[in-house]
Image 1 (cartoon, rainbow, N blue to C red):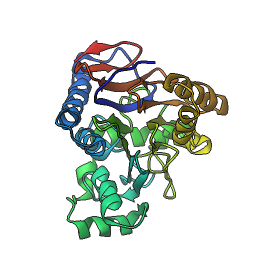
Image 2: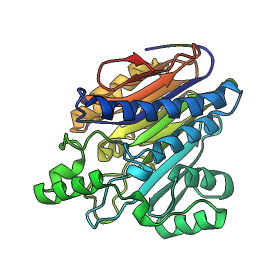
Image 3: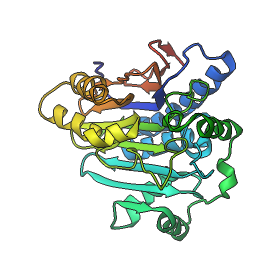
Image 4: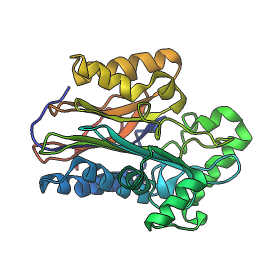
Length: 315
């Protein structure tokens, strides 16, 4: 467990079968995106901005980077579409909102934020969510905007190799990319979380994973904020994000709570992945039970860090 005082921002870019000996250019691209997301989000916190503003800004940067499975870099469904999910939540009052299955909204996290602030609902889906985005004047793009050749080839391998490769954790060549998320603690002592994803390669029948499900892949309350990444079905079944925060509220340390759910409960069920977890006291943990997790953080010291496997370096 790591503890600090002052504003804190943690971000992740997904967990899975990650080759930690990445080609130098690819590693540099990923680290650059993580670094920019940290700068954008932490600048808000340094100016006494709200945690919700910080996590939203950080996730927008990651959605615009094609090296993650969110926004521009989203994976393809079985039918060759990109379907995007996102969620945001504010800890102090547990205000939350999510969207799922959108195909034309450039930044799904901004749509989730709009649902939180401008609707009486918590979750909007598909065409209805897109109609709401148009109503709010959010930027919409042609579906081809989300097409990347690497993701298209990942789908082709999944179609050829069968459903198991669609899980997104058995294709090392393309598992450099993942769900993105951010958690923050601002100078007012408030927590917030945002998560965004393209889901699972080769997903069918309108499958929705854990990221937009409040309590599964995304959750924040007055004690704790969690953004998860991994095999979504297991995070839904364990209500992972909420389970961690319940443990923290009951008196467990952030590290103990995160370890119990991410490194014990989920693997015992057959799942895998990671999470970023932040407590209201500034303590934080970044557990994962896979080969690696793209993650970065900056705390009260102002020193940003990035890590992929078990390594760590200053940006």
